[in-house]
Amino acid sequence: MFSYAESFHSRPEAAKKIQLIHAPFWLGGGRAGAELGPESIVEAGMKRQLKHMGLELAEEIVVDVPRLAAEPATAGTKMKYLAEVKEMAGLLGEQVHRAAAGGRFPLVLGGDHSIAIGTLAGLTGHRGNLGLIWFDAHGDLNTEETTPSGNIHGMALAAAIGRGGFTLADIPGAGPFIRKENVVIIGARDLDPGEREFIRAEGIRCFTMHEIDRMGIHAVMEQAIAIAGDGTDGVHVSFDLDVLDPLEACGVGTPVPGGLNYREAHYAMELLAESGLATSLELVEVNPLLDPSRRTSRLAVELAASLLGKRIL
Image (cartoon, rainbow, N blue to C red; front, side):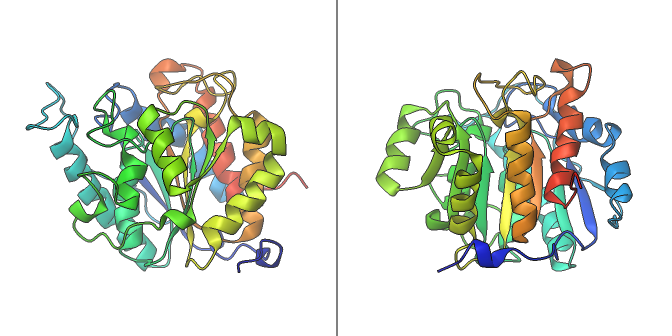
């Protein structure tokens, strides 16, 4: 059994060259502005911060994802912009796979959370047994049958574990599904009925805000790292900025009151850095149109820095 305490060592993955990959895509969320997230995060100082930490950066990649959205073509399905999401996922997955296979640390900047389908397609093509920690106010476990909106950003985790009619198997180059036993959701507080039933039936570990309040973020992260790292060959961290309380991060498309506070989020990233298990990171759902001050983008930079090893002392 994986031991959390024994996993703590120097940060080998963070010491690798960092590959910044932009995925300026919003069609999975249905609200314009998320496509501006990657540029906003970089302008908020991402590259400057990483260089200041002594980390080496590979040449930046901007994926040429579909951007048009006249009408949400569904082609007989409730899933909006399915063709565009598939195209995006294939293009992004190819770049993520190249980065990981080349020994680089993929740091993917979204975009709405549907980009995780592309990120995970690329990662699983390289790592056959990936663990996953999913920071999100929502479950993202809907399918075509259970979705209330049709927006695929609410189905991204379902696709990753093979639930529903649209999964990683539909993306060229993707590897195996993420095993449910190695998936952890953190910060959930807005789950749809179908998601609740699935989580309970399948035993997916979901630390809601209630559990974080009761247990504390340290105990939650200790368990999360143990679950995601148990027998896996790496852990991907998918961080939706709406996991934070809107008072901390107002620039997100689907804010929900009562989320993580500033220090809880940083502490979670610091523990992941100490574990040495994180092999990739994505930051999603930053919408600068909703946050002209760019506070949310700056927070995304700070959280990435914490996961990559930045410390107060």
